[in-house]
Length: 423
Image (cartoon, rainbow, N blue to C red; front, top):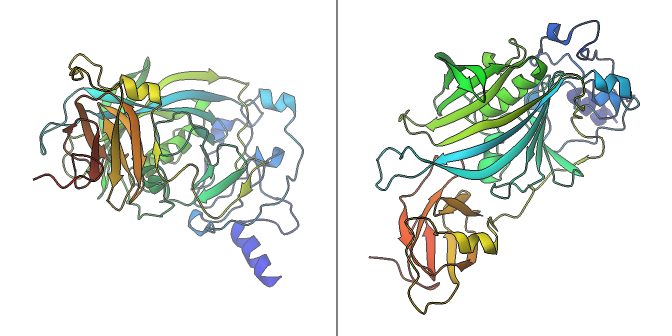
């Protein structure tokens, strides 16, 4: 009993199941939401949505969230009344990742053209500081339907399974490994140094550019003022900088400029500041002045779990039809006369991290360490293949392959499935 009481204190939960914390006012109430400044270090603000049908993560410092969360109990208040829901402002975003097309020779700067990864997201931000970051694409290391949930008064996030039945707590430092390597490892975070880089426009909105550098790399954010985003913009900002290995407590993402919303994040690793590795960008924005749906963090129907990540450890990311369409561009090579309609490319990952096989500019499979995947419906002609980690810290030089063939990373083999190393 004493141990449970201590854990309840660490989680910030009232053993009686009641919360005495003050909720931030909703947009449109007498106390304007714009006057609420988040205090994530003291974590003194409760969740208006969790006190209205969801559950509360409690008020610990973010770094002491337990790796195996306890059950957080039942809701302590009824659902938010319909009239109150109408008052909540927010924004709905569509966003995507893109990668630079690789250089032909190691050491060259990437070509200016870019490859769309077709890794799309639907993001909901509310003015009271909540974020639902939904994965919609089948081209990511996490399956479509997976969600990240986060809130302005807590550092860290929740990784929610596609069926919304389970979630895991991600403490600060875990986001990068979760998306990049499908592992819940907490990496050290650096304090970012901010530098203003001028102004511009994106999707018709005026933005200011801010560059954040650390010992690990650099991310350049483009930020627009969208009043309805409220504190939700700060939550998205923290997510984007943490993917750069930067501590989410950086002043840029504290929500002091309420309604400042990141519309783009360009990532660079190491000292070559011109070699962009990956870019996140918002492609559309819809403003909800009063009718935004509340985001519960965590959702009332979900249960905590202590192991696993959504989706298989290795997976093919393209359908049979999409495989047959690869290599059909203007520079494609015709298949030899009399060749079969389809041929197989086997891919094997011998590295110690999750890698993505990219064929003719499209991600076709992600492979766990010692993982393998087969593409059985490729055209039997020459294709261009390279390997990369999701964030692009590790890449290979592009090479030609002609299925049937096998490619192994980091040692490439060209031949049948039992092929010998190339000379």
